[in-house]
Image 1 (cartoon, rainbow, N blue to C red):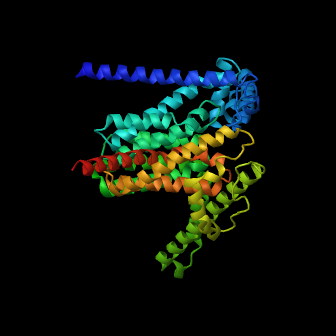
Image 2: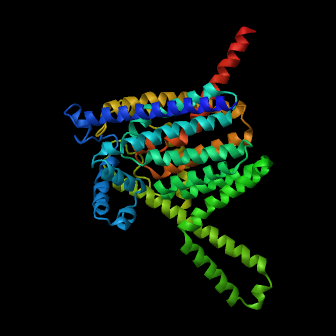
Image 3: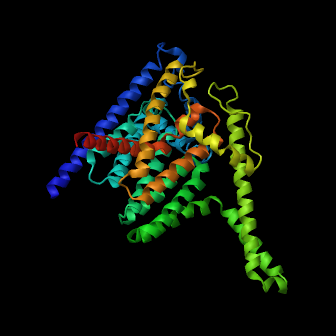
Length: 439
């Protein structure tokens, strides 16, 4: 048995190493092309491509942090940039050479780790189907647009890795597996995602709360570990908003001191009013955040060729609720066929063709995902959480992001249940059709 485990570990390590070197080869090849005159209109001539324009900003920021690092000013290197992953880009520039290619090994390891996470998620959903799990992992990792973006200086690989680790932890707990490792995975995944996109903390906490409720209801054996995971994840919110919690406590304390006898005789009604006011204020704050995020996208890329609905602004909760159906259509189905053959200002017409081909695959997978939700062998509470995860994060992203190109990139990890469920749905449908034909 021990010999078999050692053999499995060695085989896994060889595969992991091979994937890392494959990604490095892709990164080096793209970097060399981006330093030549070939396809000059699609890159900056210094190793970075126009299909990931944020990399240009991160590269400049990394040079700035590198100066602090060389001068020994570690506090400025660590604390002067809002981009967590840029600190490590600067560190790789200092350790190797100030060049985007220096960060390629880190990107390669992150990409390979994402493939491994998808494999583990699929194995937990379908324990007896190793080949299917491998197929899901490879499809996820080798998805053309995703693979290309992971070769640049984006924060996406690390955010995606964090979300996948979170899903791994929660799917394991929802599936009835026990162990503190799953609790740590769920909480560490949220932490890693939070470090790269701070604004996604609340949605991930809500999804973690939903997973905890489902575990408490349907999976008694994992209750303790799910509660532990949620306590650690909730601690991130306390860490991010300590001043708000202190203000709330001070207001409640002041209200209790100044309360007159009539008020103290009716504590329940007072508590209800306090709770209602707190919920109302929280909703207003979230509406303001979402409206500001959407306006930021509108103002940041006013002339982008893939902008959509930039004339829509949110001023109230009613505005958001009325736009949700439209946001869902855009989030799940854009870019639409009318966009596939249009010219692109920065990434070239080929990027539209690639997106069009990928969207045709997504449309097929969406049908399979619906079939999986209705007939899949996975317990219904796990399917429900997978659906809630996808719908919540895709719609929220579509509400804020008004650029289809950016939306297409940002939502990829949110489509993971569609990928796994779609492949499973079509696999089941094909098997059932074969059985009917044979009989």
